[in-house]
Image 1 (tube, rainbow, N blue to C red):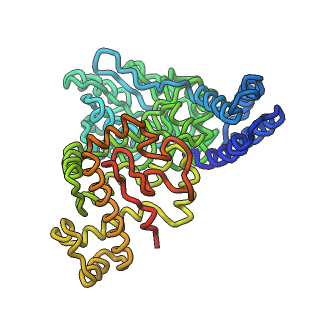
Image 2: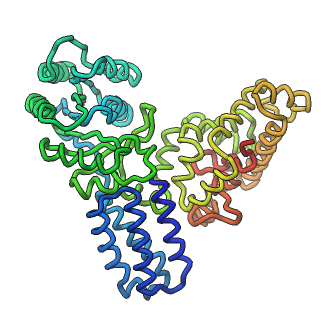
Image 3: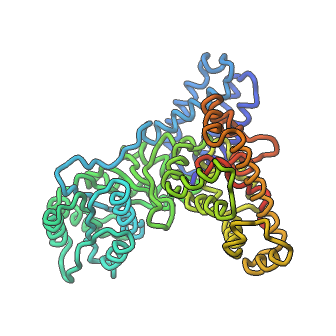
Amino acid sequence: MFDSLSDRLGGVFDKLRGRGALKEQDVRDAMREVRIALLEADVALPVVRRFIDGVTEQAIGQSVLKSVTPGQQVVKIVNDALVEMLGGEESVGLDLAATPPVVIMMVGLQGSGKTTTTAKLGKLLREKQGKKVLMASLDVNRPAAQEQLRVLGEQTGVATLPIIAGQTPTAIAERAVHAAKLQAVDVLLLDTAGRLHVDQALMDEMKAVAGISSPKETLLVVDSLTGQDAVNVAQSFGGQVDLTGVILTRMDGDARGGAALSMRAVTGKPIKFAGTGEKLDAIEPFHPGRVAGRILGMGDVVSLVEKAAAAVDAEEADKLAQRMAKGQFDMNDLRMQLRQMQKMGGLGALAGMLPGMKKAKAAMQSSGMDDRVLLRMDAIIGSMTPKERTRPDLLNAKRKIRIAKGSGTQVQDVNKLLKMHQEMERAMKQIKKMGGLKGLASLFGGGGLGAAMPGIGGDLGAGGKLPGLGGGGLPGLGGGGPDLSKFLKK
């Protein structure tokens, strides 16, 4: 997401930060490069013009050019302008303040991912907000569209309206509202039909459904990969239907991000959610401030912490904490940490959320490190016997050969994993000597996160090491995350 734009802007701001004093021409040259970067990212031309004019006017002010760190000041101004372009500091969530059932109508063109997004949203509302949700498909045009939603409902544990063949969309909407009232449903999601293009028949159908169901939210689902066409679609729908927000799908595949940056400014409609993958939990609220931070390489630690909270099993974490306090750490503990990292999206996702990680991600890619590293390590641990996982010191040459064959790896890979484990075990013993977790906590209290984990608060350390993945420990995963820099792809 935004990778190409982030790389370009990172290069521009690195030059600015590298200079002590800035002249007005330096800022104007930098803004020219930012303008080109935004246009190449497929951001709408009027939006780029407004953005550059506003930023340049502030950036060439005396308060910036005469400041102690003018480069940093310019970056802050760009960051604030990006947040404003994306919709302001606060994310705009769903408005569910109404008498149940609250109706949410999903609209959009065919192929934008509307049905899958409906299921993702239903799952999110049920699991994260504890709502009782009912989904209904009003798409009688696309073959098996209603059946698709029913299957997705089974996979997500969200109820769907029973299918009755031959009913019109308005009749299905009427039946859905009636069923939602009878079943004391909190939220009713209506998945309307799409078309290959915006036409009057589609608009009339949506207006008729809206007249029957009185939706509290009408969400437009658009494919971010279509770039400025997604913005054009949003304008077309917004002119005909009272939209309350936009959901951008396939954001994980859009390295440019022009649609997201243009959408709010052009349509005036807030982006409420972003689809970030094919899995049914790959949808997240759209936070303008966090997205701007990712674009400018400042990281998104808040989202990282939220992912950690969702991925880490509290009971397992408590057991690990007790073992750490005793200075214990075996292969089962290591495996648990590796799996938590996978649940949080893998190495690439984690690196993108930590501040100053652009160079680290590039270093990881050039060294061949990717998420297959985690899978390979898990396979090695899986090839050990329960006794070997508990007591890695039993692993002699013969056992290592057996484990390597069983996991499809080399003996040197097994040795690298064992070395990593030994280093982490030593760290656990050090924690015990420091007075256990309470002693470690006092470090955080006394010197703050930056003192306890050098590199997290700033840029990369010497040699482009990745904080948290190169010896510093991954925050939220037991205080001593695995040093993956020594376990590279073959």
